[in-house]
Length: 229
Figure 1: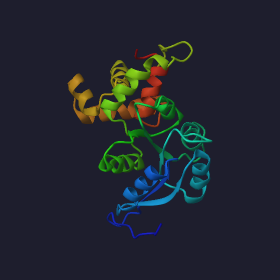
Figure 2: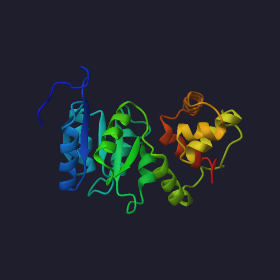
Figure 3: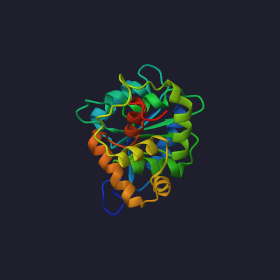
Figure 4: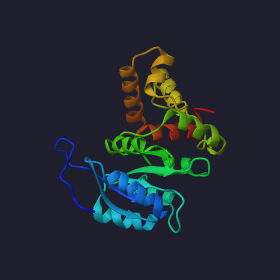
């Protein structure tokens, strides 16, 4: 792929690696992404093992990752690229067929920064890449509700369940539970009758106190600790 001059106000383009075992889908993703003036596709591959090797060579900002692939699947590849203890984690955006894929939750636990459906329109994919590249999590509230509703029975609280020693105030705990329910900042603000800026402050404090990277990890944490049912 040709290297282009940055087209986003002089900033370096977002470097993207595409990993999907279906050649047609992979080609489509590459074409859409590489056509953007603020993005650059640094490589493409068809399985997780190849993704890990390419990340080491091309150092992308974001990996667009399929889950179901031969050999090393997207979940394990995500864990090795972005999971706990990885020295230099890379941001992973999972793209999946929700109605068929039973492992989305596990991918988020593995360290993915968010997920999109494969039938999402191109503008949502591009927004997702830009969102994840900034360090934010991509959790569409409606899809999150479906995900949690479908897989909540599979999420087993950690040993001992919820702890009375959580370093959160009652209000922060309330916000965490609403995050786990899939509510956006706007919806949390409306529910608690506070401003969105105040919600952002609460979210930042929750992540800092619990040592979490983003809202995805907050959702996983809440369910693992038995804070929501």
